[in-house]
Image (cartoon, rainbow, N blue to C red; front, side, top):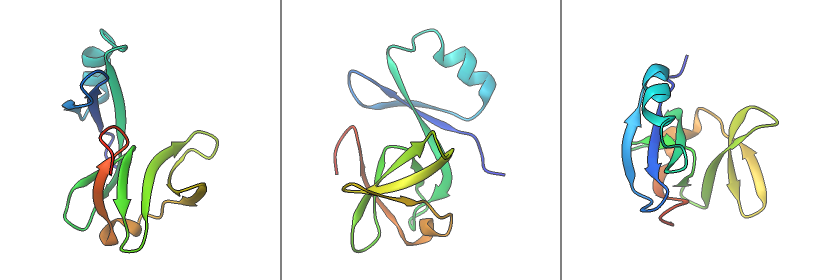
Amino acid sequence: MRQIKFRVRNKETKEVEFYIDSVGMLVRGYTGYPEKYILEQYIGMKDKNGVEIYEGDYIWDGAEHYKIQWNDDDCMFEKTYEDVTFEFDERDGSDLDIIGNKHNGV
């Protein structure tokens, strides 16, 4: 089972302010100012450099760059290149580099 973890980003500055690694802390730490923060969920994988991959990250597979996003309909993380969406396979992480995120660009 993968770890449930979130990266919490300030909506105004776009900077990561803190990480949440338990649901109890999420309830206490986030609900007071939901309009101030953006939650990005850890997808349970690390890139080839050991960096945790979160939704909203841009990744590079050596040929193309993709954006990681959550699909509500299929209840899974996916990677998107231009207008094409692919299922995010758990084996993908070891071959990827994080190159940016949707808030700060590639």
